[in-house]
Image (cartoon, rainbow, N blue to C red; front, side, top):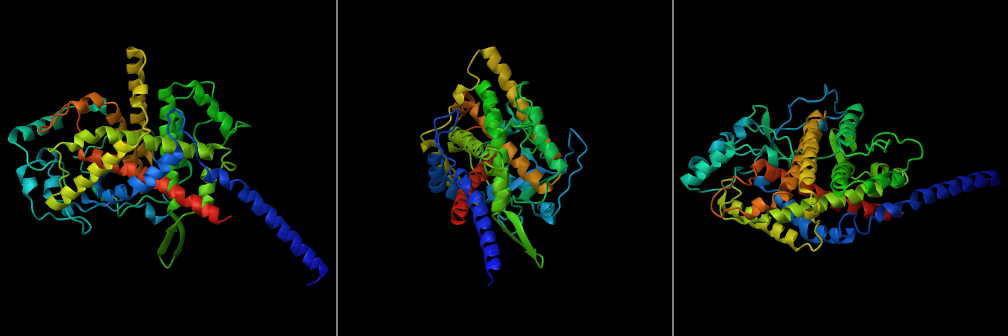
Length: 465
């Protein structure tokens, strides 16, 4: 090798080394998302350990149970705000519903028949995608209880809902096997995706008039308004409005983590290969590439996890009643499923640093009531925006996770009604539909998975150094 070639090679090697150092210099700040979360007394390390060793293995197992793997959803509802124009760039956007012929008669008969003797005594239920049985809630009930359930089905409790619920009786509503339609990268992006998130952030999050910079992280930044200074506006908002923004930001971060962790890496001979994409992870969460906002987004993910964790601990009495049976028709499996669910609730109650929801809407009664209603309507509007998502698979998981969070909020602000639940009969004061139950546990399962995937990315980044 000539001296000139050696110098050129050395120069290129030095430049590469400098570039590597620059690249690695900001990795620790991504890895080290630590400390105490704002607006609560919980630290991230405690959540990581609790999720890894207690919650994640159990919630993953629960999601594989027949009762929780099937979700009824209407993916054909038109967008109520604009003409939807989005489309997916790859075939994996498609959602494969369960054929109507495969759904057990006791399920598709309608809510008034879900608790009937015919539905409860069906021994051989047809099944979707080779899995056994799915069903409603409760097994054997007295005639009085059955009538109460039917009466409750007619009861309009829309004032308690934080979400725009799908009409399960609609011909367009179909059961989807969540295990066969996993949430992952679909190629859905561009103006359609931007419009959805922009509407969520700019039109529904509480934003002071003094803040000119878009809340939407997909929007281009303006001037030198970096991520750190941008968040100072949150300090001027009341707790409830700060919480609202953090919930939306946390949900967005969780969804992005799922896409980064299950990215289409390559497709050879029609066989796709899915796995973690570190470049995409850095683009969305690296403090340099996001101007300091990436770690904030991840902290909001932990905050959202705390909110839903608190809801699970509060709703435990609802499921502990003997009248509640996660009915699928398989007695042994149903008993195991409920045992596992109650075990998860026991773990959620053991967590020592829960978010205190009583600190919200605790001021002047009239003002607090008005703010709570505004909070509820803003979130309900976001649930309607999910029908504007142009990718079916993205819409499916967006609707499920939004409904899950909405159900968690419904639980948090229904403590008195839950405490008054009768042991052996249904209550009009507080009820959860099967769809709300499935959404609640699967949405929390997604958050649990997000935190677990974040740990995996930390390991991958450390190994890449």
